[in-house]
Length: 166
Image 1 (cartoon, one colour):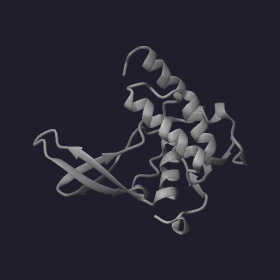
Image 2 (cartoon, one colour; image 1 turned 135 degrees about the vertical axis):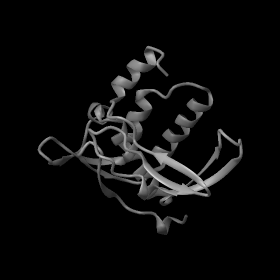
Image 3 (cartoon, rainbow, N blue to C red; image 1 turned 90 degrees about the vertical axis):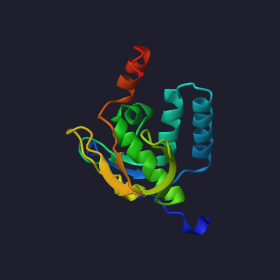
């Protein structure tokens, strides 16, 4: 994708009901993404600092409890439900590289490896608090279910990791 086709900032209603203005990944965000990838490759859990820095790079404004847009602080970004943070990052990815995402997966039944493409625009906007209601679609004879998870916050996720729940 050429720089002339990249999108500018976009307004996004998050699953938690708040609205964020999200920017495409910039050079700093790309470096953080590289660091996150290296952490995962080394089988280390990414720390909150990386997540906070990445969100801070791409979130321009976030509505407060009165619906007024303002620049959010680090604690506020980490306190967003997991699904809302994922929606922000997926939107930033879409703005940076376009809506199509290619994934490679192996069927657990037949062990066949297949590459599929899906559109990020079809994944968005599953509202809380009803829990995860995944978007389902079929491609190449396979059914995919993609959702934003629960409304858990980063703090709750860290607690589960400490308890070795995952």
